[in-house]
Image (tube, rainbow, N blue to C red):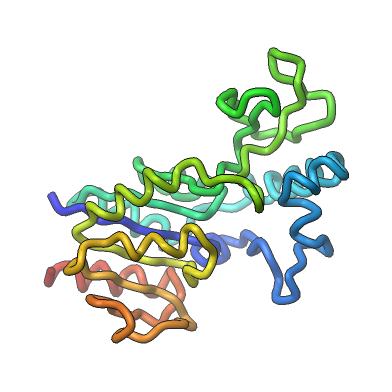
Length: 228
């Protein structure tokens, strides 16, 4: 069974109604990103950071996977599919995908500030005073700017084994995730689905650009797979 690796980003979830992390001016709900998504922001104003993610969590629980999420999940009938996502939502899982690597963490989990390996399923608000068993504050299970990406080596290994690579809903401009495509095998075809692609097909060996949004581009790629 051929191995498909799908790299996904904010664009695929935006079609379900989830706000992208940053607006064009670099702000999210009026906040500088470093205020709400960095260790420094956490130290400076824990309440603001918790509220920021509590609001995002509430929004996530109100939306549903879209046809692009479901199309990826359907691929598991004929391929070994692994998703490597920059998204912190659970829409891939809700659509039925069984192998999902969250590079930047998961919004529906909380973790201890004492031990990062103490991770809890968490669908309600995280409040000041919500402690782990070691009496340390819980924080969102999110990789913030300036923090290491623990699963990047796992993602590199998976991409290096791919027979087919897809990039959906991400411009691949944010590192280290943006560097993942450099680890594909030389002859591995790569399908890049983006309504406004920032690369040309001759820039990467085997690249095929589908200049459509995720919900339109995924069915096109599924049809193309039949010829590979």
